[in-house]
Structure formats: structure tokens, C-alpha cells
Length: 87
Image (cartoon, rainbow, N blue to C red; front, side, top):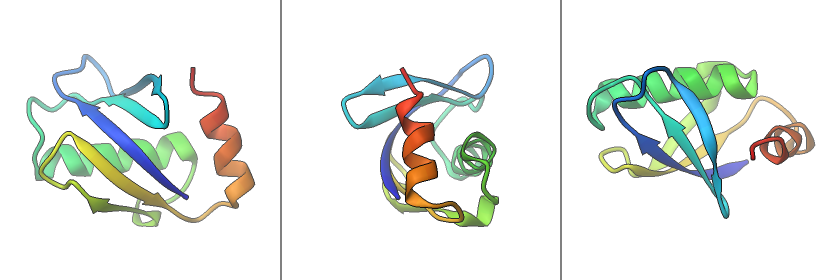
């Protein structure tokens, strides 16, 4: 599954805060969008979608707040169910 992520730095904790259309908004605890923030984001998304961290790949936007992310390791239906539960 390929999804779009909007990273919000300086969060109190790592969390999914919602969706605007097809873009998932995720707060991360790091102060800026960087390699460290990308690692934090990947680890958090792996936990959120219940996949291994190496099953998540940033396809586009490594240095931007808007990212295109590919998630593998679970069926498309399971991942869609997780996405549908995001308000």
C-alpha cells in the first residue's frame, strides 16, 4: 500500500493525529524533518501498522514534510482497515 504522510515535528509523542483526504497527519517528537525524523517516523509507522520497520520505505519526500510511503508486510485489506480507523 502506498500512502501520503504529512509529518508534524515537535510533537509531545509520536502519534497519528488524523487524515485530511488521503493524507495521514503524523506528529513526531523530533524538532525538524531530517534523517532522524525519518527513522522515528518509520519506526512509529511500523508499530502503528504492525509490520517490521524494514517493510516501510519512503519513496518520495525524504527531506520534506509531505512524504510518499510504501508499506508492505500485511495484506492490502488489513492495511486498508487500519487506514479506515484513522479519523
